[in-house]
Length: 353
Image (cartoon, rainbow, N blue to C red; front, top):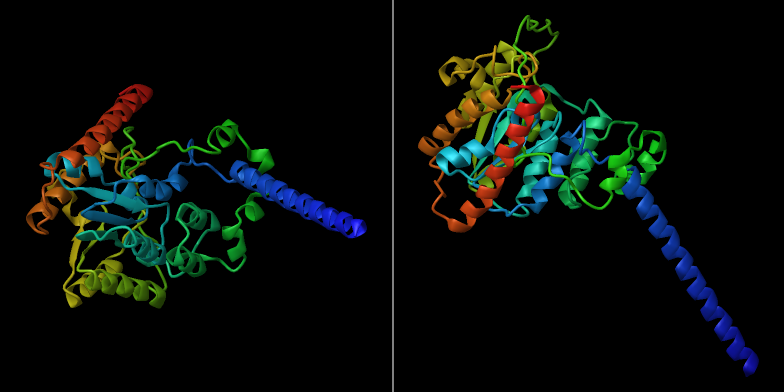
């Protein structure tokens, strides 16, 4: 009998030791993963944009989806300040159209905006071009069926789904790249955008912008068209106004043949389409002063002009409400505007403007 009790106690101790060992291993792997995964708080900050959305009070009337041509060219601060339009940019670096679709699908888990603005530049891609860009979009998404589908739609042949589930499998060799920010931001984040807008105040005029090279085929891929159809149908099912835009970025080149395809699609499906390249003079954009990288993206001056124009359109043509009479929302935006102005002044000082 005593021997049985001792055997039971030994088995119990073995179970406890095994459980403690498992907890230690899992805890160690968790800490290593938090340390090794890129933080995107200094330098390349674009990988932090997607996750910032989840901390917001989600009652946005306008959601932008797309690549750098949305998050560097439009300022939600201006839309609120001038028109009382509550908006957010769910953009990321080289966000492909299938990623934009699943980003919108993910957004609808939390809210249903009145309008979605999609930038059409990404229609040029029929498949993912870079794992690095994939990760800057996908790793910031919260886990859901939408994220899982986005990963499957985006992975290049050499990528593995399990590496997204357990990022340590992908980043376990990143020791030599670690910096102070990796330790400082293991368990906290640094806000790097303004409702998804990435601010730059410096100026680099557009000069000698290259013409587009001749392409063998100007047709958008079937995959790109399929996801645009899916986005349109998703908006229709949720009574969301889908607005297609082409930002006024001079490069990458926007071909007339691409323009014709988008214009025809918009007309066929009764969608609004705004090509800001054609409207740049009307908007007042000056490519000598309103871009920080020779015409690829707007700087703060250009983004505020563009946003003021779009805000008027959204208010007058799309009927978006002016919500500046809602006290709780005004309090939120007061803080956002203060942070926006603070960074603006900080960048002016940094660049000597």
